[in-house]
Amino acid sequence: LLSLSETGVRSLNTTYSNSNEVDSSNNAHKQQGNFTTTAGTDNKMNDVWFDVDNFRKVA
Image 1 (spheres, rainbow, N blue to C red):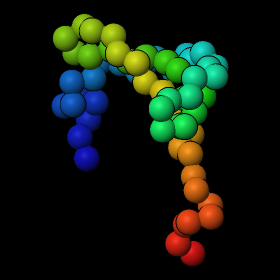
Image 2: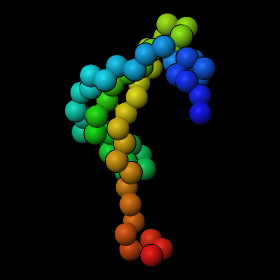
Image 3: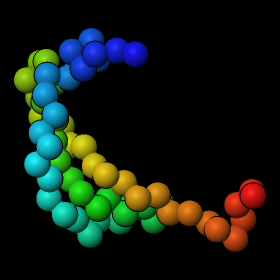
């Protein structure tokens, strides 16, 4: 395992906004927040609820 700083992440903002965004693969991006890199740039992070095909899944 790597630490956040070893992967270039300075901080994770645990504050989020609820969202109704659905991407082109029908995955719902329910909560959206951000993180800051060690270079100082802000990037998005999302809680993604993946679309599941229950009809074709392997038991």
